[in-house]
Length: 350
Ligand code: KG4
Ligand code: ZN
Image 1: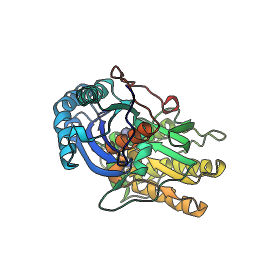
Image 2: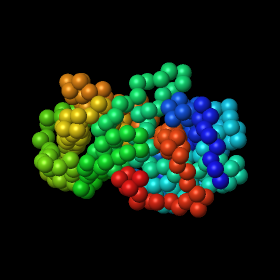
Image 3: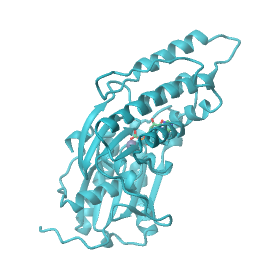
Image 4: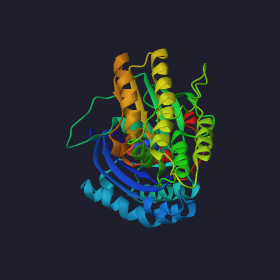
């Protein structure tokens, strides 16, 4: 089938179900959000202290079609009026991914619209291109872009030379930054999800109270957070006593400072070395306010524009998937209806 030429206003329906958020969105020309509906399962998983995969996939099945309908309704469009259907194909939980991918395939088959499989991390990167229609366009990141992706499953430094061209410079050798936040939250008896709880607890504490280790891994762009996590565990064990409660705020603030130091220093150093014209920070952990401030201040000193999406686009959402899908559609890429999920799909292989 020869693809039709694209109209001047291209609307992509995005679908995201890789973890514990069911989301659908419509985005125009890869940037303007016409709708973005996100149903979080956070309350369902809170009692398990983390995402329970079977519960997640069952909930996606229940939520996906009503969410898609609502996204189309809010955008005042029917399925026939969108130009493509973009869906997260991986990485993510296999049983969750398959729900979004099957829904997208069904809709693409019924409507004869283009189906576009999107890498979840690529989606996070494109959250920096999004803007709310009522607020108007924001400046676009200029290439080459040095991007830090910090989510629950990934921590990567990526050089984007042009749209859809990614070079992975480095990544975590063990825990992802978000995973470290979640594990430390559990150690400190803070509620799930861990990242926002640690940030909140840290507000009342001193980042200098404990000198936790920073793994610099000199000469590489890699990260490591497992030593830091063990250091927090040891400190908690040393402080535990039956009478006095743990100094949770100081522990949280000192841990958070160690994570931020490693992330911010490496990001800025890489931006300098690769002469980046923009710095981009994306993924769930980029919702962390002290991390945002730390990178913004250092980027200003370097005189490189820093793009960190508004907090509502940092965690998983379908608008970012629709945005990435638009740039793939523009490049003439489409996937076939027998496209399968790729739970371990690295961004470097996109
Ligand atoms: O990108 P995301 O929504 O899902 C994945 O693709 O993994 O990221 C979720 C991660 C979780 O580990 C969560 O604890 C972390 O992002 N996170 C935060 C904050 N908000 C979410 N970490 C630190 N500070 C926050 N404010
Ligand atoms: Zn994510």
